[in-house]
View 1 (cartoon, one colour):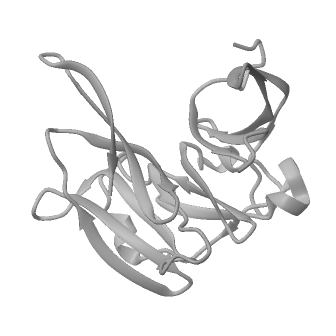
View 2 (cartoon, one colour):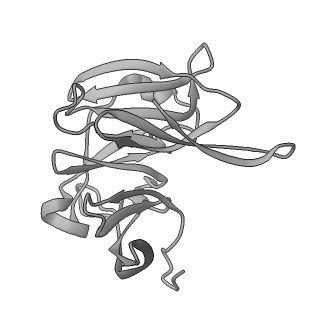
Length: 206
């Protein structure tokens, strides 16, 4: 909890490999970072928390231009990438050097991003680790932007090179987030909601 006006709507989180600190992005276009406090080896709280607007290349908050709904976050070769759902864009930040003042730089995305279902797209960004056959790529899996067979449209992006694939959708679950389980498995966090069946969540390994 926080009385800070921008707090809430945390959509994506990156935890440092040693588990000491985290960086998160929120729906309203803010960064949130802090230190994880442990007790008996388990997370017990957050300390030294800070928030700041996510900035564009012009140093203005991305939310000021309507670029909010940041839904996914990952790191590739020291650069952080955020997927912004409402505009179907991926923005890159040199957070390691510039911290919360890092300015976003758009990366090239496939033109078919514009055909995604509204507000059901960039919920999963993941980066395979060094040594993986897919190292250097961004993995994108859509929340509920489906192909003709009803499966999640997915992408590998490496500069201007793009590969397209699909991940089978099952039992009405949508993709909510993802990460890599070393050395090379993709973990999908999925959720389902209906009035008849209620709320369900699961983790799926690909």
